[in-house]
Amino acid sequence: MVNLNTVKPRNGRNYYIALGLEGSANKLGVGVIKHPRLVSMSQGDNSHNCDVEILSNIRDTYVTPPGEGFLPRDTARHHRNWVIRIIKQALEKAEIKDPRLDIDVICFTRGPGMGAPLHSVAIAARTCSLIWDVPLVGVNHCVGHIEMGREITKAENPVVLYVSGGNTQVIAYSENRYRIFGETLDVAIGNCLDRFARTLKIPNAPSPGYNIEQLANNCKNKDRLIELPYTVKGMDLSMSGILAYIDSLAKDLFRGNKKNRLIFDRETGEPKITVEDLCYSLQENLFAMLVEITERAMAHVNASQVLIVGGVGSNTRLQEMMGQMCKDRANGRVHATDERFCIDNGVMIAQAGLLQYRMGDYVKDFSETVVTQKFRTDEVYVSWRD
Image: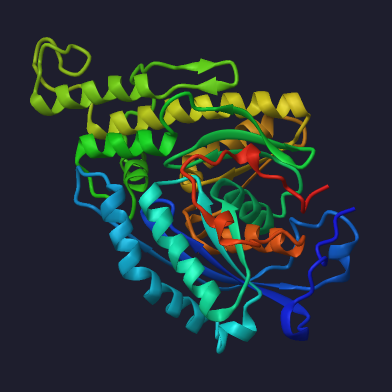
């Protein structure tokens, strides 16, 4: 039986407070959360219902000019420049007067992610741990998304669709592991959308994927999809070929290549499709692939619930399509959160790290805090679930 009260709160309190630091990509997030120490937490698996109180959730994004991506070196410099200020803002908003007395654990993203940004945030976490004499917990970024999603939506044991800039996975829990049932074979869906946004040279603020979603919403030819490759291979999917093909269509449109009869009318030479049409068709195609492999995983484990997490999970069209699939299944239901929790943030790292800490699993030596760019979801032993 899971006992989430294994470790007592510091200084005789009846609640836990965790500081979470996230910086695996271009989002730098710091969050503070509070867990009450409830008797029910020692009587079984209640890890999805911790009565979490979010005391602060501060985030700053490194934004590049339209048509450009973000490099690890420049992103790490952004994180180094801002991390102390963001930590101070988070502590002030959470009304933490003395971190040495008020914080039980500092949680940081150990991986996966971009190496240089991960290092920058890990150094900040180690420094705070030494100064304040507070324990550390290294958190798997993907598990952070899952646990925050479970806590916000109260989804007990759903099939998880994890869709972000660096990952695309269909996951189900079994025997203390989040098992990966299917995943991308090449680029992640968020990366696919970001790279297409660079081709279109649309702004990176607030995010490329969001701006593609808005262009797709403005499509006036939703009854006529542009035919794109559809590449589902069993439980896995591939998006690099789709990206290469739609990139070539966009470039022909911009160059005015009237030899491309798919884009330009043979007689008038006028374009038959728009940028909005391309964005809409790309979204519909990719999301249909995700819905297919998610439904197959649901059938395999006999699940009725889907939890969508990760930055792309805040896309309302994806939620709508997944909801329609779930509606067609018996008692099906889709769970999702908004951009506060879908997009990378510090509170998700604090949530997963605090669950781990409450089971007595925290850093005993700084050699355990070395970050890694490759840290698969199914490598984590999930001690806080039955």
